[in-house]
Image (cartoon, rainbow, N blue to C red; front, side, top):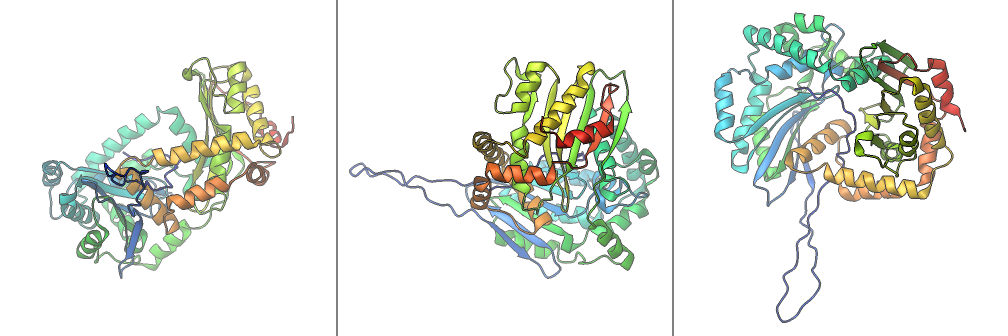
Length: 478
């Protein structure tokens, strides 16, 4: 199943563990923490493939996966949907294993094999006992280099993907965010959907899939990640055995040109898309400004600012979440069912905004107006208390998101394939801890105050303000 939206990735930190020094029954003392030496190690092979690991000696299982710097953004209008289609075919048989053999091999070792596609990455990963890591690496390399992509499998998966698209189209949040990307980055690769249009899904052929592999599945765009009980040295040896023959560059100049085009920074376009459907009982609205990339110096400041705006859902009960001024106001005035602020980052750009859901159709204008007035407040009146609260929430989210070897592997893979390195917990703690209310206000003045917005709205949206009215609210003091 594809990962449809990179809504809010907070996976930026490592876990640490303290051990207690034994206490003599005769002489008592304080427990002494001992650093276990958990670090991210990385090695690059001669063909450009990077191996990155976080070894936890006490772990009995490991997650091993390949993160590829290519997703739907690496496609063209004609081939949009190919990356996701290819992910579906990955487990349908190779030149060395039939689909049945592949499934039995994984089941017999008690392992778990999965894959997903995003706008910028394709990921294949497996979780297994440490003793089975060599077998899982063998399987991953076989899938990536020897998939048969048989015509009958392609036709079967074509129907599966079309049904998947029908299900996704029923999820309003996914629909709204796809349209948000389409209007904010219109006519550009980042604006396309991950699954692709129906006509592409119906027409993609084996040559399209093979062409995508040749252009994008190159060693210099891959990171082999291990998290858990697998030692770094072992994974490097396995990589040299199974991945050393993967080519470093695309086989043609056209492919190189395609890869270069993918890396062009997209233009953010202030614009809107509205799909009115009064049979939908709610108005579902996303509003965003141009956000920050993973590498941006303001990455964490954007997350702290987003946390100040907060999230809220009336299902939480009668008490609003008092940490967010916006949630208190919306709750007291019954303006919305829920809202979710977001800071979505990509390799060179991002979207920072809010997703609003309301069945109060007569006060949509108030909902949008007071939401954007809160954005404006961030430019000149942010307190130390709300900044510290947002920072604490961010740190907790970062640490809690790294629960298990798969989450750690995801964090390593995403960071290294995107930025070339992984931040350690001390760095994250230092950067987040140093952010002040002045930094938040400076960020808001640069990125929010009087900036163009992209708007995506679906459902009962007759009461939504005219675009120019919405845009004018980006510079209000009251």
